[in-house]
Amino acid sequence: MLNKSTLISVIVPAYNAAAHLQKCLDSLLAQTVERLEIIIIDDGSSDLTPAILRDYAARSTQIRVFRQINSGVSVARNHGLTHARGEFVAFMDADDSAEPTLYADMLARARSDALDIVLCNAWVHCLDGSRKLLFPDTAYDRITSGQCWITQSVASQQMRHYIWCHLYRRDFLLTHQLQFAPGITHQDIVWTNAAMVAARRVGFVNRPLYHYIKRDGSLSKPMSAQGRLTAARHYMRVATLLEGLTRALTSNTALLLALESQLIDEGIVVFQLARHLPFALRQILFTELQANGHMETLMQHASTANQKYRIWKNALRYQFFCVAAQAKRVSRLTMHHLLS
Image (tube, rainbow, N blue to C red; front, side):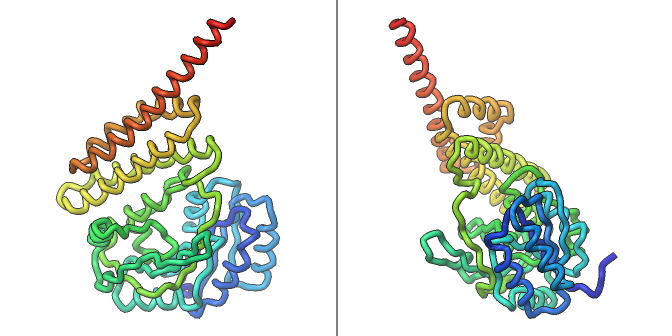
């Protein structure tokens, strides 16, 4: 049952986050909203994260700490949802921070307009020290449905999949049984679309209240070959999950086209990552793409000539690199045979 004494549950997955965790927790403890609980899911950290969490939990009854075997951010967030007692639920990354009025301002908007989801603007802090607004366009002031939010955002190229700038009514999450897909790094893409498809009322607080810090080493731009292969597999699964969302849409053509546009964008990333793989890993991924029917899925949901051109261009470049690598390998083996 809902604990009426708690207004907002903030869920924070933490994995080896010791370098930035204290700033995150301090900004949460400084929130001006009353009856806020902070749920930290320690995802099997091996650094000083557990010690920092023990110290903060001993000092504040707002903080509840749960530990799990390292299972990834999706499982950690789902774990946090099972412990949430608030009327509303939010998510925060352990290396980010927030303005003191973040949740007070979002809660006020959610209650005054009876919203299922409320979003806020945010500062994105880049690696070069600059910062930019997450939503540079301010045309989001009116209350809308989540489905309209998707179509408007895709049309204006402002569809953002960052859930840390969202506040959700917990009853809404429970009614629609929303869960994060385990085993993929880019689960926010699927979650955001699934939540918005279900939301009847969505609103926006046009103030930068969250500080998102871009850092090196993200899986979407990994340095290692194995990391690129993992990222490509994750994007392939994201495309598959987005394809699943489209199956239930029969009447809202604009929404279907917006979801298909995202499906194609995310699916093309697979080819872009694949081009940078060494031959052996490229061949492994090629086999998996064929078994998954990845190319066929993208083409099935392409409705414009430009989309079809982008898919074919990226797929053919990937296959060219596969063929070129194969030819180079055969040539090398042939030369070795002639000289032996």
